[in-house]
Length: 274
Length: 352
Ligand SMILES: Nc1ncnc2c1ncn2[C@@H]1O[C@H](COP(=O)(O)OP(=O)(O)OP(=O)(O)O)[C@@H](O)[C@H]1O
Ligand SMILES: [Mg+2]
Image (tube, rainbow over all chains, first blue to last red; front, side, top):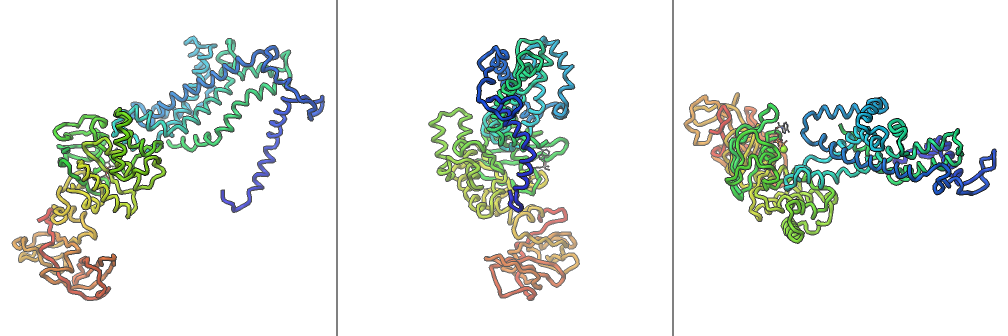
């Protein structure tokens, strides 16, 4: 950044504007580890009491089951989204497909389409396929809803790989598949990485679809679990406990963001070319 | 390996870019495909290596018809204009790629990569990545990669276009040296006549998808088949004068005076429309006839000086001479014209 003007007024303004959020987060963290006397915000006691749900299933029910399910949900989604986007994006970017334009515009439309509006159709399809109320059904739906975005982003990354690299590979005697796997794929790994993280976060935080498409299933994901914990009418309701579970739920996402924030930005740099 | 194009035809959608081209590149020869931008040089090259499917005719390597053989099986090495190195691989991995795809064992790959790196003088760069190389070094790596599996034919698409002037000079002789040392049949695509003339055994000059002339650089320069070829070769370029024959062995410039014709054209009938081409080195050095005029432009080029001389009737002739300062802008001069070396073309542009 050029230093033609001093940056501190901007920082100050941003600091003031985001202070409430930061303070709230700070209290969220503090509250989960402390008790405060009634009517006060200042804690007077350090405790792990609110985190006891981690080892005591009698508090809010078992938390590790939903955690495992959520993890499975998110990773499966990553696998599906990456597998399909990396191949479909390549095909749309490079191969002389029949109906290529149709695919492209279809993807564009789906990309912009609010997925909630599809839910009735999705519901019917799942019913028909016998996947209603199953984890697989929810994963498939969630992954396919993300695919237009994924394919489009990957196409953008493939578009930026010079055409000559591919031709050079073919001239060097490699099959198209080898060229893709050994020469082209390594050039789009930043895209794959960002897309994978996005897919993971998206899967991890999904709440709607499990609720709607598997309301009475025998599995729970963390978001629905949190929903139960946060129900003020339930017998076990405890605000600090709710905060702890909430923090536990957000933690992986926060860590992912902290570690990969720079990488995530380049999805917008790489995925813009039509 | 001899490369032959027979009635090679290429169309894109409805546009015929190359129509029934015939070309033979002899075994071990380096041939330049020279022509202006968009004339179909790259198209021809990509057809030979199999990137483009041809729409008609045949491509033969030796006696083997490769028209329908996929790129992977043609055993052609290609150097692309932007080198197309694999950015995520080191130089040695780049060069090893064709061999590893073929399934050679490690020791052999190692040996071959060393050998080719030695030939192209890049031994000390093997551990680097392409982004850490200069343009000339990238060029050498691209050459090494194209040559490492001992292809039958080497194709170079404007290999020097991305280099600066000094490197271009250096790589020109380097590419030629490597081609001669390996004895490989090579086709060089370029729109730079200097490159074509200095690097190649023969030049095939193209315009609008057609080969106009195939000859050695000297023959082509001395005896171009038509006006286009004459104008394309030579820097500073030839001066073309439009006019007609006088009937007594002279040439009359449109609206002006006469110039001598070469003696081989002494019997050309009067009033035949002609174009007369005067190369700058044929005016001002030696010759039987004198032409006088005024110097209207001087361009010192170091070793040589380029003059424009305007004759009494307004015709401008160009002269290039070893650097001299005894004449200057505005001086009247009478310089010799080497009439025997002048080029003449008929109304359709063909040499006469
Ligand atoms: N893939 C393509 N689709 C349609 N037309 C093409 C295609 N490739 C080339 N052409 C056309 O074919 C003609 C010859 O192109 P080519 O690339 O062979 O020219 P070139 O001689 O290599 O020119 P340059 O010196 O600019 O590289 C041009 O008119 C070009 O527009
Ligand atoms: Mg070209």
